[in-house]
Figure 1 (cartoon, rainbow, N blue to C red):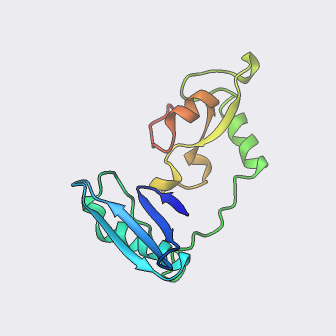
Figure 2 (figure 1 turned 90 degrees about the vertical axis):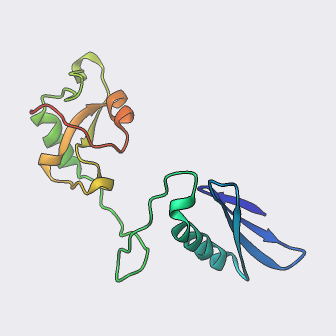
Figure 3 (figure 1 turned 60 degrees about the vertical axis):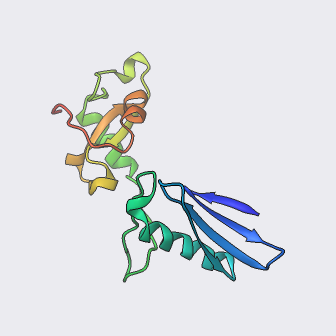
Length: 148
């Protein structure tokens, strides 16, 4: 069994009875760790990516500790329908990036101006109406938007 996780690989070597966590560095060199279980191999892969973060051939964002030093992500509560409607109404049911209107058939979404990954919040001041193409094109980036 072989599974890729980002640029790392976890493989079960049945003939030898162990799990292997491996990353390939930008130089082409491979670094691996043997472990007895799949869960231990997952942890070893994370440790390898952390240890060799500067030498990987891609951008790897190191995980941040969340609850009391663990790497568990807290469950995120989505934006309530009331807040979504408030944002849509405030913006006149128009995309704040390109001006597309719901009346003309645009599919509107509520977008975070400063992405959650960049430290943004669910405050009304950080939410904007965006049409689907603008929101998908923006992705997780933070951009400036014109005022309401």
